[in-house]
Image (cartoon, rainbow, N blue to C red; front, side, top):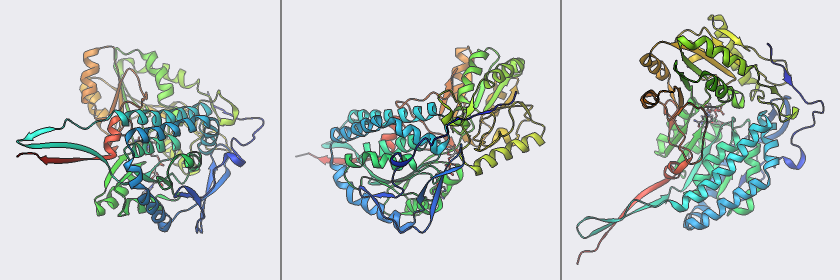
Length: 496
Ligand code: NAD
């Protein structure tokens, strides 16, 4: 069975005119003229049309934005939690009022289906609401006398100015995961969205401009090695937080080492899905239809690497292929029924096709899919790959496309060893009806999140972040508020 691309008969743009934000940097509370000589074309990956042009920022643009953030930091840090919380709630309300335009803009810029874009926007709003509540509930550890006649008080303080760098797969939601705790903890910020997907971050700035003092949030568009690198380098920035690939994380950490600023990295993943012989195979296959292919598999936690017990491998693969065959590929304009959009760019499309081609030449077989689909647009068929030899490139590297590999194992120790045998450690899942085994295996999997009989279910209350090559630092939850603030001990001598 070959997938086809669903397209709209009337292909009117998803976002146009006033839907689009100004194509300018946002600095000091306003969109500012730029001396940029170069502009990046923003492409709709479903149609390959250019939908906007944004300035390629330079070091001077970053320095100007950092100066604005420095200027705003004292006033913002002085607000008591209740006041900052009210601002974050107001941001959530404002975003909720504009859900429709944010959904359409995100779908136009990334090609993601409307349902996925809506999930992103709903998640974004919930992140602001969660942090707005959480920041009022956090207290320091107990104060007390730990040395005779000395009272210790532990304070949580803002760091100052934080630099944020975000990827293209969830442009608005990844921005929110960083902006909300940064502001909640009392910092000001400069954010650089992915050069490929800047529109919803600029729209965010446009929508919330009147809710924040000027300089608290600044947006500079442009390339990673220029704008991102300057943020990592800038002496007035206290912390740099990046979500992106391992290479970018390494570059940022290296640059940040010079000024010893804090680094927070959410990098790639290659999540193993360990399915034991007693698992509910049908439930696993149904879950993977979503968890393996959500956002066209351009998802750091995607359930992309199945390790299934050899005794049930054929049955499971059959179930999975049946489920994957139901996925509807299409342009978001085709309607709400579309499950999977295109890949984000021509370069990424070529990269994924390269992986599929090399896998084929190594004897890996597609049980379904396995190739790209007719354009325009960068569509790849939802794919399940079998006959994958241990250590194959396709099962070790982050493909970041609608591609799931299926490998087999024969005992628990082998399953765990192979699950952990990749440089990443972001997430994993284990499928079994045996409670002892589910806990024992989860404990031994080297991943920041482990699901049992589930995959890719997230909540704002619980932390997200990786081990090993997937980086360090935590997004979401109280841990994020912690990461974006610093601890100070003040000791009072009160002896007479
Ligand atoms: P990318 O690394 O190419 O880009 C991410 C951001 O880093 C962009 O804004 C880019 O301009 C910037 N950048 C690139 N080089 C830089 C440099 N030298 N200095 C500073 N900034 C630089 O990643 P991408 O292709 O946009 O996103 C996909 C990657 O993101 C995947 O590897 C995926 O797994 C990862 N990701 C991780 C998480 C997570 O929570 N762990 C979430 C989403 C995406």
